Image (cartoon, rainbow, N blue to C red; front, side, top):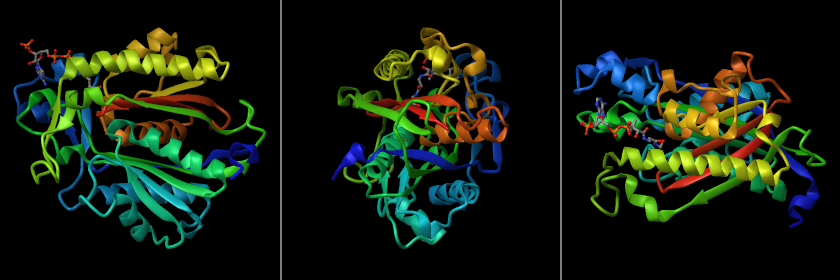
Length: 329
Ligand code: UT7
């Protein structure tokens, strides 16, 4: 295995996103729990979220995003060597949602698995796919973040039920020859961290081997908020420094979309001006692993993010697991 000496870079050749049809406004939530539109907007920036239909499962959302990505990549499902789905809300305990996606899109030649890193799931999946591509084992990888938090929130708990939404986003990464300079397109660097000492500040109160039930989201909001700002800012500073860059070199900051106050606090520490930040949390809410590829898809579709732009991504979620990625689109 020659690894990085092969001079391969993982280039984004396709991207897609999907949001379920049903929009749930803050106003609608006020009919279910003791909350208000103003509280939700002031503390989170969220105005609305999408909830999946009763007959949809996570792999349906994932497949819708994947089909768009395959189409704009101009490749077929059978051209894929690897499918990774980042999700904390799989269709079933097993098999993986990724193998269900593989079945639904009609791929029989690649291999598929899920990564469980909750809100950091897409970043971890990109990092794993990038390693397979750089090793030369994989040419084309479909990387998806797909989530249905609506299925695991307690609709009586105002501290959590107002925060989340459903959705899916996808990238297709292709291994292409590269001198691996910062000017060339592709995944320039990724760095993932975790600290299991914080397992209990964001978790579900159930699971297959503990309660035999799926469980619902429990979160110590203030604690998670504090860790998020600190760890995301540090992760961003580290990856920039390691690659000899500063925030002034970055065209777009596309972070995980959990709370606009977290995004703005991190952006302030990194001195990113508002114009460089892609925010979709106001209309998608926190879609966990789907939030980065969904925000990316929207920003590219709207013509804001263009080929050749240098992007900084970062995310944090239950575990805690967090990380960052530097990508030239
Ligand atoms: O994606 C994974 C990572 N997750 C995150 O990044 C989430 C991180 N945390 C947060 O975003 C924020 O902590 C929240 C948005 C969850 C909460 O905001 P906060 O400013 O930290 O509020 P708090 O939890 O300190 O609650 C303040 C008050 C409390 O009332 P008291 O005890 O001061 O009387 C809560 O009971 O707000 C109350 N409250 C609400 N009031 C109206 C909590 N939820 C609601 C609500 N509507 N939905």
